[in-house]
Length: 324
View 1 (tube, rainbow, N blue to C red):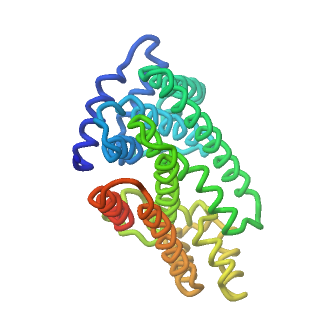
View 2: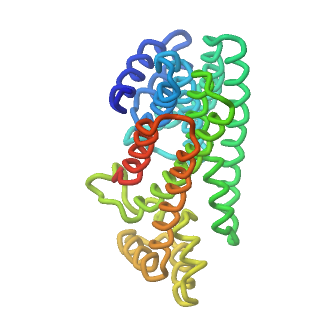
């Protein structure tokens, strides 16, 4: 088995070889730009790692890993347009650097390029990969729609939120791992088990992201701490505070989320205090632990060696200890 860093380096080399600018430049330059902004490369790394875990040379999965990363970044380009976001990974978003029409069209091209990458596989493998990819891509779109719907709803529940992040975030992590199983020729049972592992880990990952946005260390988090609070986002912390807090705490949160004060630092500080006093922060940490544990339970029935199970568990634990 290789290290996470080795998978990442191999993937970046492959990405740089396969993704280059060509004519028309205004279509392809934004694609090169967004894919070059970095990020954790979590999903492609998982595809490569899973392929090797099921006993096949991970390099056979490089095309599928790239497809997952291209699709993920396509969704970010379009999300940024919908959110009117000025920055992505500390750099200007595609629609800010070029324009909205370019962002839409380059994003469309990325979705098509992702499908094209599966053409590098034999027909049976191609069919399985494309089938999983289509299902996943549609679920990601559904998750994004739920997220947009929540912006104007005042009655969103924690279960609804968990369903939304399952579709918007977790299914792509799950699919990245199942693709590794498909390429390696793993049994359907093991493919579905590794999918469940990835899905639960993906939910835990997003909940951890919500938690770090409020309680992360500004030196290591990589973006502004309290960004979700400033934007009045209905994260699990907010929804749990409304569910678990006293009438006074509920009123305070609702009042704070209805204003855009000049002093955002004071708003962040007060909201975080309510997140703690209401039990929302503790509840979120518990849910992160629950979904991580659900992922680890899958390993008990997965048909791989104990050494490989330990590697997957270590990966999950490291992901939950992250500060970025």
